[in-house]
Image (cartoon, protein in one colour):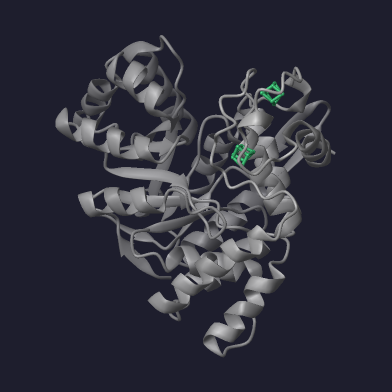
Length: 377
Ligand code: SF4
Ligand code: SF4
């Protein structure tokens, strides 16, 4: 396993992190349960092969992920870094933060969390809740008491908000210590800000190296660039993430032991991309995307939609599904989007406010219907 300095946290983190949002589950009656035996086997294999970062959250796997992870790591808890997240609700206040933290500690069966994230924040949540309701100070208090070791955030917003969050927290004297954000070879929008915070000393973790499906053209491209045989999609996706020197750890939501074994193998491999190969691959990905009949550039001119539909996000899923052929990945993105309360074509009122603003002249309404129906099917 390869390891990296985790910003200035003083920790060494494995290049592969274990995302605990897709543990194997089974149904009994109307309820879903985590298959603990399989989880134990997967987590033990990852640990024995050098993975030391395990990331969960209260809502994952029908609220069962934290407890399942806690049970799976109980024999080596002190040898690993446990990460979980604090759900953000307006009006939760400092007591709400504390209650959520104590609940997670209980679920995980531990007396401290190594990285405790303000979960899925944007600029508004940071300003109104984290600053406005004193949550940053409450996090500092929990850290002083030893309940959490590092203050972190996970992020869903326009990349420019990352700088605001990191700089403002630092100016308050309670700096963020690590950041978890979306980043993979198909979505590089956070790349510049990852470098910004990494240069400042934050640890960086990326969620969503791409799995499943087959990126035929790019994997062949890899062969052309390196003169080596073509590689699998998951290997390409990992190598791309890990080729970024501003990234400390690539998180993968692993569902099976086979996936764990494959990912461990890639993250233990020493043959990284050269800087030149890495650049060329990134450019080639953008070229492929331009051939799509639904080429949304993600410019967001169509936003805000009257009812709050995240049109560029949904079209992004279509690119994964249709252009790159990553159907399972796109469907997982869709499920996550809907689970977070994301609006879909079902909410569209046909006001046409979006179409006149699109520089690509996309028939947004028609395409939105087609994409949403495909992804939910
Ligand atoms: S037509 Fe539909 S998608 Fe476009 S702005 Fe109106 S509600 Fe939103
Ligand atoms: S305006 Fe058009 S190209 Fe830009 S994000 Fe919206 S749909 Fe995509």
